[in-house]
Image (cartoon, rainbow, N blue to C red; front, side, top):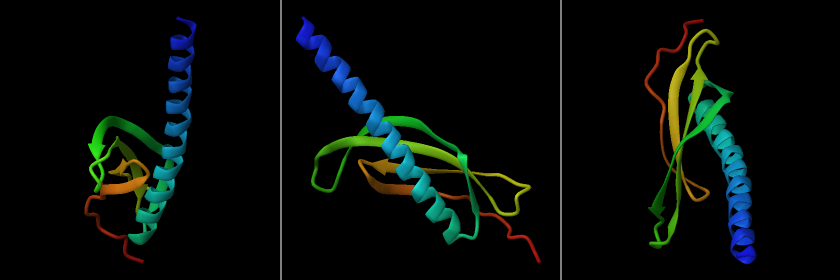
Length: 103
């Protein structure tokens, strides 16, 4: 019984640490995507909204996490975006169309 409890606690600890690592990865990738489109990532807005199972290119099961975040074009607006991480790899992403401010 004690061994099962220890295994469960270790699995929970691994999942928590892995989730923190993946959030940092999502912030990095979200920042790269935002800068590619001349947007500013509002990094305090990055949140994991869904965790599911997915298969990578080799057919192995991995956690598929969806992260939602906001970006801004001018500092006065917010665009709601998301990206999906399959394991540690960027699976897909979406940044909605926007009008760039005229200088």
